[in-house]
Image 1 (cartoon, rainbow, N blue to C red):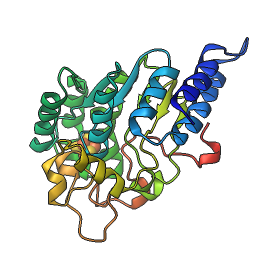
Image 2: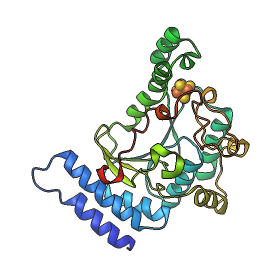
Image 3: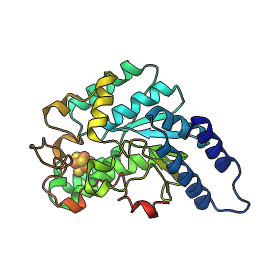
Image 4: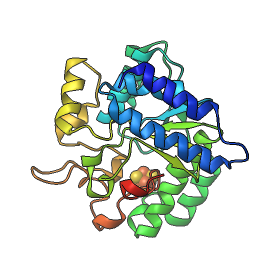
Length: 269
Ligand code: SF4
């Protein structure tokens, strides 16, 4: 499928909603079209252009500055399109992560990465109640910390956006195995987009190397997935790539709430 075809198909869906349809139906229809058309395009840049052409309004990209998101950031810069790029500063990042942020802004200037912080009073109340390392007490305490430092700031950053780009990949973990290219996010009322959902780790690493994309130096030290410093460790050979995140918890609960557990592909719209 050519890019022109993609634009025509997506444009019809976005520009001619059926009369009296509700926003969730329209959003789901747009997401279904984009899911199909993104999957038919080979290049990441072409997928992002298709997204920019199809979705009216602000399209935001949340970057954790990890390997996947650095690849998406590179492609966003290449498109020359106006995407709203932001990252969440939880206050607990590795210094290397913040260095990666600066290196990325220098590489992709004038593109800026908006830094979104948690509400200071929320953090003070959380720490007063649970302690500065309280997230280790229980899964509930850990999720409360993620809620204050990640989920609430994310919701603030996504408010009013029409599209939300992520760097999720299906082979990152078992719970991400059914991540679609595009789905309607009813909670945030936007189209959630995962333009490298089908990429393998080898494909990702080749894209990074071919384009000399700046990456967090921790990746070379055994950290394939990098979150907050106290909640991330290096992994051992053969471990799942997300095994270093909240390693003291059961596998089932290991998401921070930023990404709701994906539904099976056939039900994602
Ligand atoms: S990853 Fe750890 S430190 Fe970061 S917000 Fe979640 S519980 Fe808090």
